[in-house]
Amino acid sequence: MADSMRAFVIKKVGETGVVEKPIPEPGPEEAIVRTTAALICTSDVHTVKGALPVPDGRTLGHESVGVIEKLGSAVAGFEVGQRVAVCAVTPCYRCHYCQRGYTSQCGGPLGGYKYTVQMDGNMAEYFVVPAAFANLTPIPDDLTDAQAVYTCDMLTTGFMGAEHAYLNFGDTVAVFAQGPVGLSATMGANLMGAGRIIAVESRPERQTLAKRFGADDIVDFSQGDPVDQIMDMTGGEGVDAAIEAFGFPQTFEACLRVTKAGAGCRTSATTARTRHRCSCRSTRSGSG
Ligand SMILES: [Zn+2]
Ligand SMILES: [Zn+2]
Image (cartoon, rainbow, N blue to C red; front, top):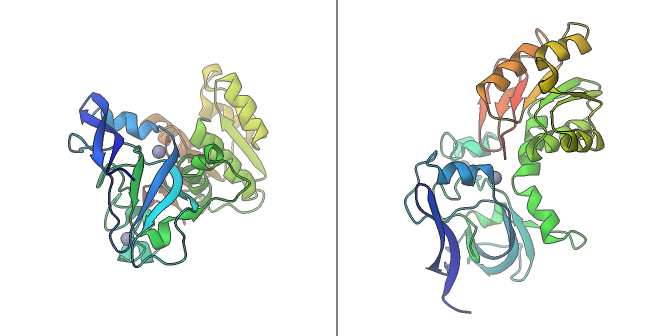
């Protein structure tokens, strides 16, 4: 094994490149994974544009799968050579936040989002997995790496939006935007027993995918105010839960406006990386 590897880094705000870096060694609780597939996320694009303060030269990426290359001395239950997926969020599972279930907030607000923000990301030939005893997920043999890599952020972020909507069977759910995360939220709401899913989307190919993944109705926001359309479709009552998968203040507001009065003040607004108590059932699912 050579001792250097290629890594895709932010050279400075607005500039990226591939550089050579030393192949990392694992600490006692870490693993080193050899990358076999990776996805670029909107968050990488935002980071390159300067939205997150990261040092120049930091490796980008937080959506990678691969093969375990090395295991730290304290990591049990996994084997070198095993195919694994690693979530974009890699919490410690020990701190107060993690133990209360707020793993995205590990150590403090947004603290679970470590790749690129707190350490080198995983768009490199090898990457470190912190708290590897809890952050390695074996990939079943019948899934390809290219399939599994979608679980690292897009699927999990969308599913978490649906989980945090705390649906009851038969609930009516609106999902704002049907990009990869919104489509995953639609899929998640369907799996969690939603009775009616209203997908807000204007692009025809995404409308088709939304229906394939469980949407019952499509609201095309280019054809009129989506809030008015949803209120009309629900007899003026609104929905039991709304999931925000676009990332703009206007869509957050639209979620609040379409959510039924008194629709369970017991849930949270969320991304896979954020989880805040909220007084309504609109949930944020991130823009992945
Ligand atoms: Zn991502
Ligand atoms: Zn933690």
